[in-house]
Image 1 (tube, rainbow, N blue to C red):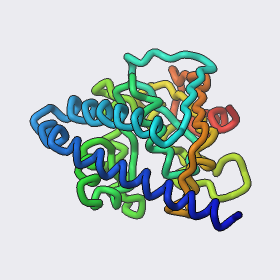
Image 2: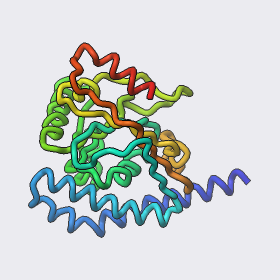
Image 3: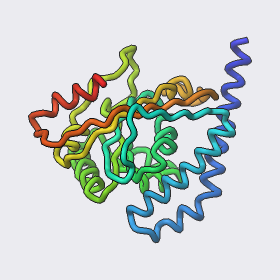
Image 4: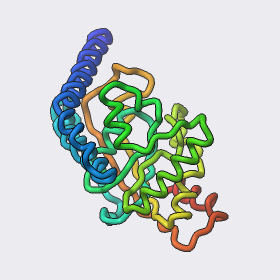
Length: 239
C-alpha cells in the first residue's frame, strides 16, 4: 500500500512539474516582451502573470487555497511581509496570496541560473548570495530602494527552512532594521499547509490538499529606532 501511495505521489509530482514547464514555455514570449517595460512594471507584470498560472495550476493540481485576514491591510502602500519558511512551495503561495500587492520577494541568487525560469526569477525577485557580505549589503539597499518606490517586500526572517520541531527558527535582524530605517509597517503571514503540500527535503513529494494563508495584524514601527530592533523582532516572533 505504501509503495502504491509513493508511486502515485511521484507521478503526481512529475505531472505538476511538467505543467509548470509547459506554462513557462507558453508564457515565455510574453515574458520576453516585458523587457521593454520599466523595472517596476516588469516585476508587477511577471507576478501578475504568475498569479494567473498559479490559479490554473492549483485548480489542476487539486490544491484548495484559503486566505484569511486577522486584520485587513492597505494594498496600495508598501509593507514588509514576513512569513514562516518551511517549503519550496512557499514561493508559489506568495504569488497567489499577494496578487493585489506590488511586491518583490527576496530570493537565493543561485536560483537565477536555472534555464528559462532563471530569467523570470532574476526580474521578479531581489537576489542575494547569503555567503557574501557585500552582496547581502547590496540586497538590503535594493530592498530599501524598492520600498521607497512604493513596492512591498516579502521575506522569511528565519533565513532558511525550519527543519526543527520548533514552530519557528530564531529571526535575523534584517527585516526589522529595514522596517525601522524606512518606517515601513510589518505584516506577518502564516502559511499553514506548505510543509504538507511539499516537503523541503524531497523533490517528488508534492501532494494535493488545502493551502491556508493567514494574514496577521499589521505591526506599526512609527517612531521606533535601531535600538528597538530586538523588541520589534520579539514582538513579531511572538505574534
